[in-house]
Length: 118
Image (cartoon, rainbow, N blue to C red; front, side):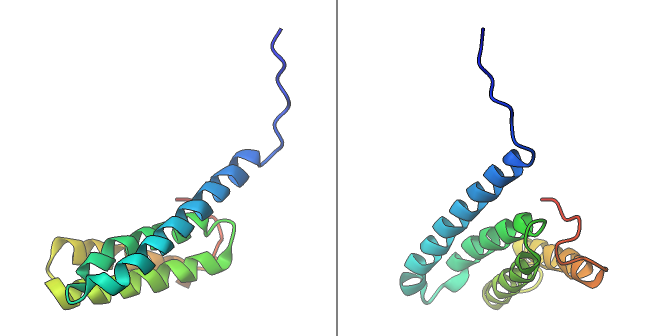
């Protein structure tokens, strides 16, 4: 007979949050390593910034501050992206769209952490 230990309620969510936080550490570390060598083409920093924003967005269900941090990182990424490639570039449009949806979530009651999933 197999010995299955009962799962604690929310254990999967806690494990996922741990994995997201671990990924966040890695992307933040990667960004800090890229920063000194990225100049003059700072567009290399856009993707790590978007990844950091995406992780904060995923963590928003467990932390209201994470939604604000996602907005912050998408805003920084959009500034760099548009500065280097203009507002009509495909990535600029995608980041702007993500930022717009995030702004709508922040504007709704309980938006900063209320019911946001992935």
